[in-house]
Image (tube, rainbow, N blue to C red; front, top):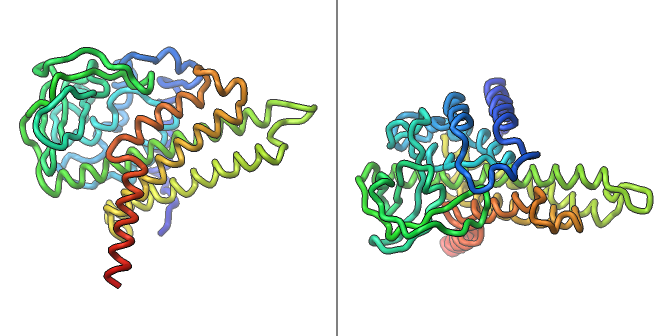
Length: 327
């Protein structure tokens, strides 16, 4: 499978990177804690086409490769707001692709029970509930609240709903299956972006921080940590773009297993790299206001989206076992 981006994809990546640098600068990330994505930043993402990348046809996989490129950049800049659910839901929620409506979502296993924690509840107008093979849309203004929750990631504020609401069914069957699969791929891409960004932070620190008159990056133990971080990023990135290509019909293989593989490796890379970044920064790294902690908390949150790394590993193991048994 050939992974080289074409000129249009490279230009799109650079445009997203520029917008993120302008509106989601990592040097001042603490200013964004606990708040919604600024209207001007959200409008910039919409104008660039980020929120409508999955196409206007419900259930289609149009643009998933390009969306993966974009979401890697969003993950690298710790972009706030319900970007993932808004992009996934754009074919079903009028105004989402244009940035007029912000959409958040949850997966519900059964009937309307609660309470339930919802990310970006205060800034979103619409809630998408994935319930089995159905996707339901519910205006958040109609949903009773139980209060505010304590977010795992300070850049991902949460609200608590009294129960899981029942909404209007907008998609069923194969379309919902594709929505979940695309969700795994784009969440994996964001995780890869975070894993790469925290590697960059650790590398730069290791090159600039001196001990015994030399950069700590010259020490073998630190080199090994950074090398392991690099390998995790590259493996997860390859799996993520392979999954996107297969989902878009541009490669061979099982698209569901490919998406699960991407989500498993992306979650593993992001969490382990962020922890390694804390270690490389040493005494500074163990303070909560350093960048590796932001990436670690974001990795914890994204790992929970559309199935955890460990749950996908179990599913992949079961698939391998079934294949061996059938051979």
